[in-house]
Length: 261
Image (cartoon, rainbow, N blue to C red):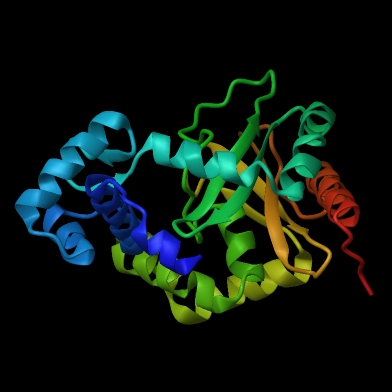
């Protein structure tokens, strides 16, 4: 079988393009041409020609300001299509509309990717909320409720590099949040309560709550969250929205076979 596969003819340009996409994944963020070329082990001139074509197709996206290259919308769509086969998606999606109607707030489903939490589904409420979160958005770990839940319940090895990158990019008053002791305290509290919240940390005027969904082995498989205007969405852990969100997350987890002791 392996001999047959080695003898099969392929299209080298496709394999080179795939190598560039792998380099973007390895970078973990939008990166300059020279960095991507180095990761893909290509001459920058050759890498640039491929990146131009990949950008045209939507597999790669180039930042208009910095010129850096990152994962494009078509790549995200391909990844999301693959994730749709996961049972947790079907279980969670079936409950999102009812949760939205019960709390009258926008709700989301997020899954984990190598770039961090990605918004997989979004059910908007009748209340208008101005935000830059949409399906396919990659969320920060420490300034979003969803990110904090993933950071709290995933193995530290999966989140360490992303947290370090966020810490390195922090500016101004936000730097206090990224101190090691502050991060550990924040994540310990999230694990203890089983919920996370933010008040305008990512988008001014928008509050958020999030809760973990666990699979039959007790591993976090997804996060469901609620977003709303700060004057309407209370983020108290014992509030009505928090309780409804936790009930929904627990119900999905039970459906996946998770059992608490």
